[in-house]
Image (cartoon, rainbow, N blue to C red):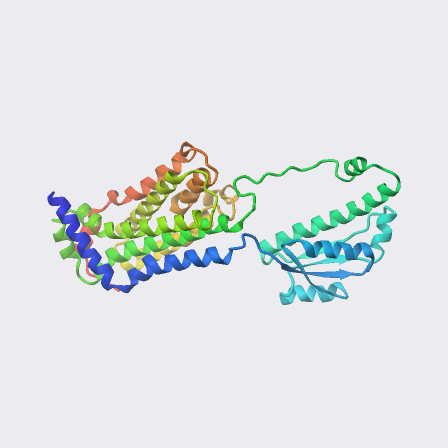
Length: 389
């Protein structure tokens, strides 16, 4: 009971610090809410729509005009303009007016009808990779549809049946089933890694900041004395209010994306709760461990910032980790965000059992327990160190 009273006293003291310092309000509540609304609103449509594409039509036939109309009908592509030659279309790409253009040379229709395989070219700017890849897909599809349309018309004129025409034009029919996200909603792919990564960044920084300011403002001795000299009690009381606030924020984030936003989550609610708890505990544990290693407010916050930013690259959400260099693939195990993402995509997004990601759960638990390794260094810093800006 004595230990519990000390924890409550330190937690009450911490609540007073949180209330009187606006940086906690911004970093623990306002900025996470802003990040959630910003990223989910930015990709609200799920996929980019009406991306500008140019046309260089030198054929000017009914077939080429039909191809252009079909291309413009795609939801992700908008024919933004027609250009007299390739040079003008290239300049439009350089200006950023369009992301790609389709070049239809002269006599394309004549050569199609004569079965001479005309060359229809398309040029794509991959400076914006998502726009470039999606326009490349649409342009490739439309050129294949154009040749299939001409072949179908010719076979029909020769008296072939519809079944024979389909067998010739498309001998193999693809039956594609995207699992758990059939809409190919990029929002549910990217937001679910970007926002938790930002939340982890704030957790890292606030944890280090709250401990470091005890040293900076000469409150360290008072803090340790309130805990009866027990650093475990001191850390528990200090981090308890932050833990409750961050858990509430991340629960609110999960409720928002899986409720109103209707992101796929076939894994179920209790797995989401487990992931939220592990995320907060591992982030706070990592922050405390960084201050143990470097009991300097400036240095520990810098390392935490660097670790959080690198976590986006090593998470594997945008580029697979197994395709990275071997050293980077090995180092990816040291980033909590990587294990968050693995648990999310294995157990929540795809609905596979937690046994399939047991190693990631274990590592996040290990991150949460890191302060046990060298917690006495924090006590020593509070009692003996002098703050150096």
